[in-house]
Image (cartoon, rainbow, N blue to C red; front, side, top):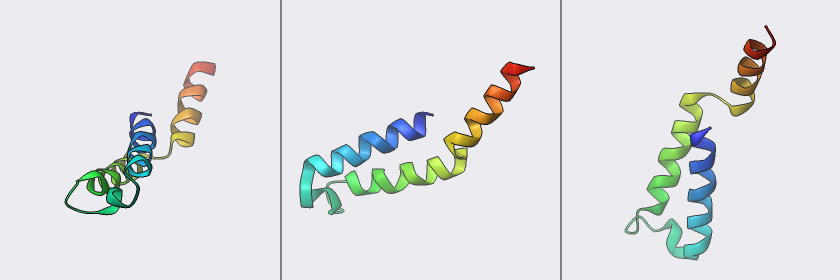
Amino acid sequence: FAATIANDVCRHAVQYMGGYGYCREYGVERLLRDVKITEIYEGTSEVQKMVMSGNMLR
């Protein structure tokens, strides 16, 4: 779930910086790309929630 929160934070940072949020010299766009890859690597939050709830119900 950390990747989901990080994605939200990065999206807000890009919005806060406006057009500069997409410029490579500021680094925010790189963080947004990296966190998206992390979110894909971890798996979707919905699948994680289903696995956790299934284990709790046993």
